[in-house]
Image (cartoon, rainbow, N blue to C red; front, side, top):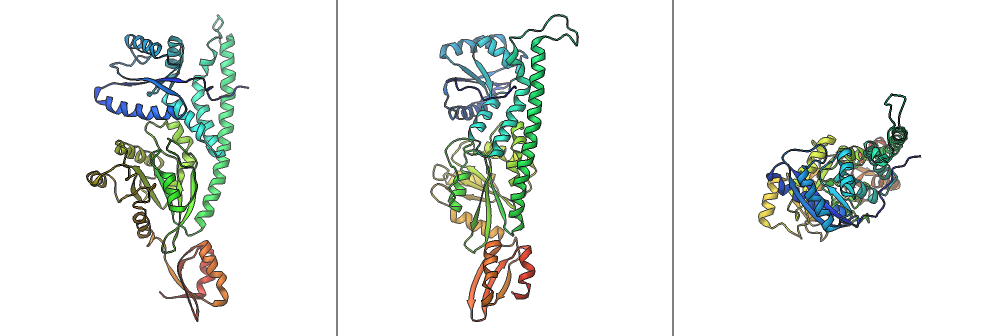
Length: 426
């Protein structure tokens, strides 16, 4: 049976190539190559060369003209590269043509991101989503694996060569695997939806932390909640959403969720495959858009995140821009400039704790009016009701008197009727 597997880790020396149609795009292309460079190094592969080439007309055979192709082939030999990575998306035919000419592995940014996602995936859902993306990516590229099989002469519909028959067989098996994987993802997504529904039955506001990959989302979650989720200075250090409760100083409880990071030129196939993990942003009462202020490309990264949120239909959700890593950069002038870019801005360092109290205060301000705070006088003999409200709802104030427990809080639906007889006017 045909299986799509990760490439064997035989490549060690990579050459990066980006193609632009205008000189004004060269600076952005260089920035994207920096990002691609980091992605590849995270896979343990050495970068031995990189180049940005301007092309006036795209060649269907190689994307580049013959002169540029020969120039690149010479450079590949000179640096002894064993893989060439296009930052641009290349077609299966172009990929095959480059491999025939260079005699080395040729891939594009899409495939690198797939490899990084595969290495980072931890939960069953993330692994299934990576598998689906890889299967769909591999389907049009199957022919590469069967170029050694020729097509027989004759050409009739029923007179097919061995190679064509094998390709069709593999395509059928691949489509079957795609269908099965999609069904598995639907099942796992239902389980996640069940968990989300349980959380939504509680009167707990939800906050989704979104942002460019490596902006510090997981570090912020850990800092605010004392969680120990995986946090590393790597692109896509984690792909799985993690939810933790945070009790604010006034006693209000909210749920924080760390989501998968975004990246420029993220393949749409991966956006679709990972939509289940990004849906936390859709159902959140508030989005914290975390931005790495120390990164000179932070505005472009913000635009990428906002674009993906728009694609998900979450662009109208209430949003606070949180500029992170102020301990690494971002002087007063830069902060003033950043305030104009991001609405409702807060400046923090999730690593050192700078600005965290201000962020918590901002969360308090936002959610202060989200739910009605009710006042109750609970008899001393019914303390279990106070405990239930603390565990299952929001208990913002508690005071013990001779008459009983005077409390302020927001009960969930199941508690409202039970507590109604003890309710007093505010």
